[in-house]
Length: 456
Image (cartoon, rainbow, N blue to C red):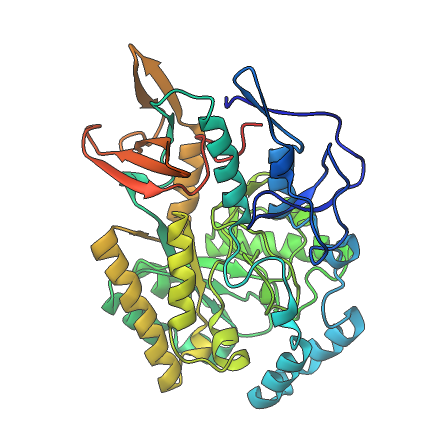
């Protein structure tokens, strides 16, 4: 447990405030009233931090602020209950006629609907790491009260990997389904296995032979929505009715994971889904119909379900909304994610990689991921592997034995002990090697305990 506590009684009303220059937070404070809008002049909670008898006192509850960001509590409640950017009526009409609209017209409609995306100041584009920055700031303050040996914790990824990458394919149409074999060939060219999220109803038929063809080649199968009509979260009653069907398809497909179409979501309703993990929450959603974002590049639990946030801009958005067929944005986002030792989660649709220019861009991305695996030892794996690791890591524990530390629990063979220390005005991580001798050093990502949550 870190030497951190809350100073004073929290005010009832929550809002936006800063914690340092870069971190825009949302929650309750004890020292001041937070702002209603992130564009206002914000108080800096760092100015109200106090040190008392080797303990740090904060004017807010760090774990609650982190939870509010991860669960998008800064978004008005009506926006979490099915009322998105297009409006519920317009959205229903749009998705009813969407299959009839040519791609060129859809692009123009979407660009118009998202025309103000560059004016959004929060979450931060193109990658928001507010959760990591909060953890890092709290950790830095706590280290001022600790000895020079630093704070030990279980490293985020197996075998001391500096980060993780997963590739996911959302199959939207019959054309995309028919292209799956070719897309698997492309992935295999770079030695990368991916997951395919399939729409169970209306879009195309999901035959047993098709499922077997994916699994036989080592790819993963997951469920994508129910029928991709954009209405999954339109009402609680309707969602629960659809969730029962989705759960049946999860069993039928032998799936562990789920993703909602168009990344629509209501995290308060997730417990109706019988899945192990979800991949529907974007890191920053300026270019999605449902705005928001979880402000983290790490997996996190929503009740029993592990969320694997989407941390890269989707291929459709890159190609058809931004009109960009380069990997420049993707590479920039990847670099920012790896600065925090986080999860690279990319969504690439078979439907949109058929054209030559899109296919070329996707191959460039795979080449880059393969290079990161080879040169930096980034862990490139399937979503189910991340889910399995994150769950066993949560149950591991550090044990102090005769002045040294060791890891206990299932999966400990691949786990590594890391230490967080201050180096000048920064926090750095030192990760022990397999025998506890060879070390690797990283700039801090900001998380500091084995359960990957604030110890406040």
